[in-house]
Image (cartoon, rainbow, N blue to C red):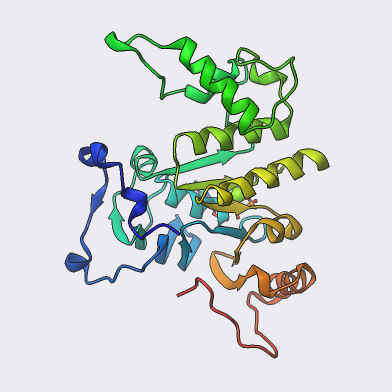
Amino acid sequence: MRPAGAMLAGRTALARNEPHIMTTASTGASATSDAILELRHVSKSFGGVHALQDISFRLDAGQVLGLVGDNGAGKSTLIKIITGYHQPDGGELLFGGKPVTDLTVPKARALGVETVYQERALADQQSLWRNIFMGRPITRAGGFLDVREMRRVTKQLMRESMGFTSAILTPDTPVTGLSGGERQGLAIVRALHFEADLIILDEPTMGLSLSETEKCLNFVRDIKAAGKSAIFIDHNIFHVHSVSDQIVIIDRGSVAGSFPTKQYSQEELTAIMREVAATGRYTEPDRELNSGGVL
Ligand SMILES: Nc1ncnc2c1ncn2[C@@H]1O[C@H](COP(=O)(O)OP(=O)(O)OP(=O)(O)O)[C@@H](O)[C@H]1O
Ligand SMILES: [Mg+2]
């Protein structure tokens, strides 16, 4: 397991562009060991709609957090706050134990956060190698693009990380030629290649076939195997259960419960989700609700 603060390690070159990072002394907040990401009492409203209210949880390094909840529960809004797309109205975000304010999309990226969406993840008409290196090309002296090297690295990633063995697929194949599952794989491998510490997947299995879904879930397992963290959003509790270490249920903008995955069967979690959907909360009947990552 990596030490707290590892998320920022090796990124000192970006320090000038990094969001304002307050020391714990300046805020009075205490850093939490091993938490790669921590949310404390985060809220967000859109006009009169309270999309998120008092959201708190933490994610440790090398762990996968499954985020579940009904349509409109606030999952994507939460992700957009973590990725700097939206600013929260209240509460705190801590990366590697350090409070971060004024987060923007480029700043979140500089902190090692990558997002993989079902749509919009890739440029369809472009080749595999261009998609891998989009926005972050390998260059030679003089600033010239090193196309040969980018093709070589892409070929290696295809073989070793994506498991693409088909001779038809080459680094020059346009992304349109890939299945949905292969696209997810490409997006995840790209994030891992650029050393993202936290990879966020917002409904990556949407629209995928059974075998593609299994492939996508395997890529999420690869993230964990690589020692990185992930937040995995999916409506299917069976998917979430099979890849996560901790499951957080969001209901109508609030955390309804947090569950260490190993301690709950898929059936138990399905029943809990039904209860939450009906009542807005969950009461543990005969065992103490393990607060897991919820503060
Ligand atoms: N930009 C916005 N402007 C106004 N309201 C918004 C905006 N984004 C989200 N909302 C509202 O906030 C609430 C939470 O939406 P969000 O998209 O986060 O839900 P979700 O859990 O991702 O749902 P789904 O499972 O359908 O993707 C909803 O009531 C939604 O209408
Ligand atoms: Mg959503």
